[in-house]
Length: 170
Image (tube, rainbow, N blue to C red; front, side):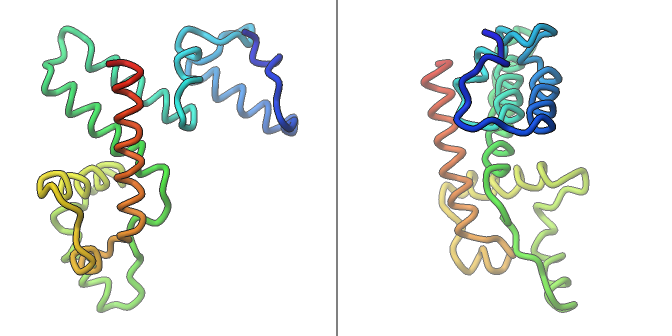
C-alpha cells in the first residue's frame, strides 16, 4: 500500500510529512515508490515508534539466525526490549543538584554506569532488578537516584512489549 494514500486523522505539515517519509525509507519500511516493504508491513503492527519497532525486529532477526547461539539471541532480544522500554519513559534517573549529591551519585552509579552510553546503563539498571527478581525498594531507588515511578513504568512497558512479541512471533 502506498504510504501517501493513508487516511490520516489530521494532515501533518509538509515538513513533518517529508521527515516522516525519509525516516520510514531510512528504516527500510518504505521503498522508492512510497510503498510499504515487507519489513514496513510488519512494523505497522507494533505499538511503538517506527524506530523502536525496527530495532525490535532487527533483534528478533538476529536471534533467529543459525549462527547466533540461542542464549546470545535471547540476551540480545532482552536487552533490546529493555532499551525499547526505557525509551518510552522520561527521567529514569534524578539529577543531583548539589556537589555532595553529585559525589553520592557517582558512588551510587559506579556498578551500573557504562561510559559507552545511556542505553547500556539502562540495561545494567534492569539487570539489577532482573537478578534480584524484585523491584528496587524506595530506599534503594533514592540511594541510586532512580525515579521509582518511571522504573515501574519502564518495567511494565518492557513486559507488555515482551508479551506482544511472544504473541506475534512465538
